[in-house]
Length: 172
Length: 381
Image (cartoon, rainbow over all chains, first blue to last red; front, side, top):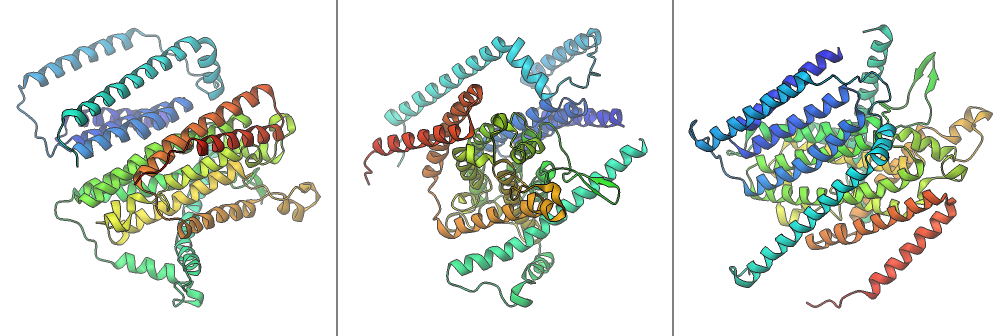
């Protein structure tokens, strides 16, 4: 039963991933990506990794993709048609994708399968004690790096706005 | 699939259907209640012609919307145009699955009935995650309508939801930190048997008044209700994201809004007001005492009180300007929420008593308010 559900979700994830790459409109691509992320969240839940599933839902589908969609609908490139099939940029993308996929296949075919049989694996308590015990320094380090990136973006954005104010077109 | 698993599955489906029906009936009568109450507050009468006291008005409205012509703009994106209201409604209804309407499972005719649809250990995260998906319905509806007012409403709405989600989250973390669990069943149980804070806890609103205020403000903004109803500001945008919708598609957006109101009211009740808890009497002394101590009727009473507050706010406050909206969200609610979270974390680590929490939080609030009053810039116009 659960295995069948996993198969359906995996299939849906693959189909929506192709949808991201092949749709003709940016909004549709963004929606397919949302669908893909939701499928992955459901896969986590089916593996009884509850926290990971909820975090995936909350962070990716609920926040990041909303901002994506927000940007895409505001800047809406109207009906951007697909270019020719031998567009060099696209060929390069396909090549990079193929190499990445090959590496993933290779890595996954030799990796030992994790034993998820322990009922506590992935539970909130265990996750928290691992995160704030064993992995506290990497965790805090990542947080710091993200903070630096955030401050940098704000700084750069401000500078651009200032330049616009100084020499750009009048805004009234 | 074993027989037991099948029974569990059937029970969950039945409960989900019952909850949905209850929510949609609640929606229908909230529209009636809202019109009557706002009318009373504005010195009018409101709908009173259909049935006794106008009580059949929701049925009449429903029939009207069912048979109304389904209009659709010529250049609208049909698929997304139809999908958007469905996303809104489905997301709104599924958020309710983790809310417990009573403390413990009850035994009726030999069946052990749990008063919730599901009780995962990550209930609060599920709730936040699902309700953050509701904005898709609004953005897609506004975009697919191919109408600039609808798109403006959708953009406003998504900016507002993203801004206030942070304040909402930080406001909810503080009480959950005191309880030490994300499961709403634990939150209710610990409030009713006072087991958090080393046996000193009561309803969480007493220990976390600031968090409650922050939660309620952010929640009103999250469900796009007045005074935060900029996404559907009639005077500026027609009707915002649902300008182009008519008939049942419009009704679905409308339902989603009211179901979301029920959800945030229920979360406020569950997390801050002790959920289904009632009077402090000994529940073992018989059925009457048990009903006085806790039960779904207490839960409903509190939820409807919050629904009334929604209507009251709408009749009282004028709409915020957009810059005011952003300033409240980012410069007031979020910093206050973070400070409150810090104070709570210190208190939990030092094992304060409940009243110490209240004193600390209140003194923090007084300091902040006086600082902000001192810091006020003169207004130039």
